[in-house]
Length: 397
Ligand SMILES: *Cc1c(COP(=O)(O)O)cnc(C)c1O
Image (tube, rainbow, N blue to C red):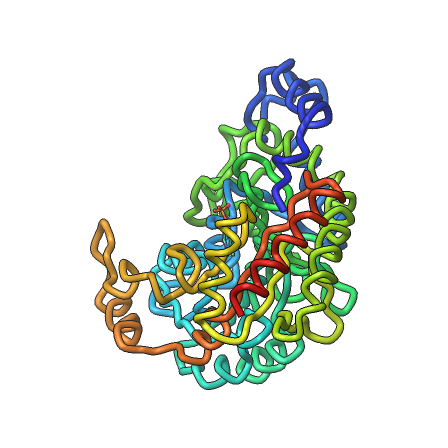
């Protein structure tokens, strides 16, 4: 997955353009920049690559989720339905707005289970937020139907899935708004960075203002700009955007390499009858950032995970036992441990988390291992890895 693995002259050239003129900020200073607008150019390139009308760069993926939800009008006391398997950032981004994350079960897609979503809807629900974990998606048609039936927004956390598609659309462009991360370990990187994408011109207009203190961006005199409402600073720097500009132009090549390496591993594992793979909904195509598979039970999965480590098969994750990505280990969130006070409404809204069990999700996450697909592996290395993985699984069954 990580773009940092394939990093060099193209990235350096874009960064040098910025260093040569010294304008590290995306707005203003027109006379000094020799025509270089890296953030603007990266937005245009993202629009072209994902076939979406608007892209707004922000500081990181977590900010992208907060901004997207804010644009969708989500705020104090509103409920957002999200999966219990994701990165903690999805939860944090909802909390930042004073809204309430409502966690529900996943299914064998490793993302939102539409039935669980339906069951969680209340009069406070404002949005459904699928998270396209490990490069693949939920049944988005089913989620869209539920969203339409209940007048809810569909906001995609596509931070781990750039390059994947669903029914011909790029992931992140199917719902009302989509979010991407370009942090250091994502498919393409800016060092730190993120983007919100949308086809809705109203959201696009407000994205531009909200992420820059509400500045109206009219005219060339920044000091003369007015503010229609409260905004914040989620601006990306030109240096980060320059790196991303080189990277996004290589996205297609990155995905092709991932697909090749993924296919070698998948074909090898397919020979083991006890191994099954995550379900990709009809019409979906993964980004091949990870190979995600299931073993028969928790015990064989734990054994396999240990055997992988013993044999030096790295970058494979048994999320059931991992601190960052699954509700089971999120005690700090279940206990609502915050640095500053949160409202009574949010506290009450989160009380369900203390006792809620996620057996249906345990059934899938307990048996799942997801292996990151690297760009830097040679064909020979990938085949050797496949061999070691097969050995480790066979020993553990
Ligand atoms: C990485 C990630 C984020 C947050 O992105 P940052 O750029 O690291 O803030 C949000 N959601 C998911 C699913 C992620 O994997």
